[in-house]
Length: 176
Length: 204
Image 1 (cartoon, helix red, strand yellow):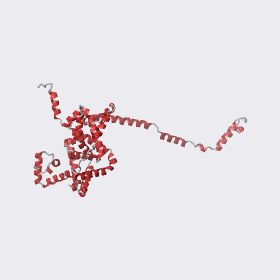
Image 2 (cartoon, each protein chain N blue to C red):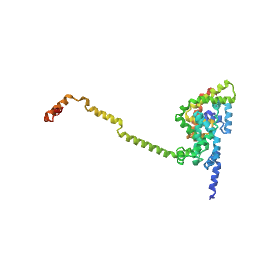
Image 3 (tube, each protein chain N blue to C red):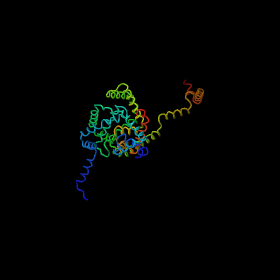
Image 4 (tube, each protein chain N blue to C red):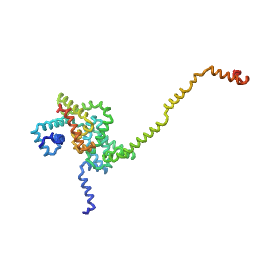
């Protein structure tokens, strides 16, 4: 047998040998080979070392009430309305095949939702929002003379002119 | 050659007989047999919880996710078709849920309890084996390093190694669970074991 390292499936063979999943005849061949080849033996020992170290992580115990909690959830679902059960089946399909079949319409729904969101965003973008209106008002106000800057002399002059033009009995100054 | 009317039925019966036992049980669940579901739960409860525990490294979360796995199995019983091995399908659901949980970043929120929980587990395991204090310390360090080394692996490599090493799934089952080709699984496992070899060499 050729060296495992030279074999294109060498890594797979070493992993399978250490996991004990190789065909018995192949496993025997490997065993005989590594007894003679130090390089391949080193490779197998390194993998076996990791394999054994990983055994340190022993399984945890499952809670005693695991089944009871599960059956309670199942019962709660069964007592729910039919439309809810339909929704759960439709949107959480566990069957891989079914999930793959659903991908096309899921993609369609996502696309439609994205389109609707974009349209809404564009629509909102064309409407002046409150901030823009306030800014526009401020700009207009800046372009107009401020009401506090009234020239008193000019007002007095206007009143005098009015006084001259109107008859004495109706003049504003005669009423003051 | 002319087929008898019963030949189709016979072929179906042969196909059903050839199905693995778990798939047969699941088909009975589809017909409303609750006992078959209980049998499936009994057989796969611990492997699923342990796989999820090693994936998310939190006991409470792993049980929560395992409940969701079996709930989804039960929900989909009416649509069940034995297109793949039952274990492949089961671990595909479990992997999907675990990866989603990790990607959602929920891991950080619950990580506080991890060390405490891990140490509790170690104490229990140590107590079961009854070694002295020094051995207990060595065991604790060893377990912590293994846990960290596995946690540091990329998600898919981690899932592949856990299914291969601890659940004994073969390449085709892992490829079904991870939705990738068998050659991709071999590559994932090769890289993962290489990384673990370099990180855990001092413990071997």
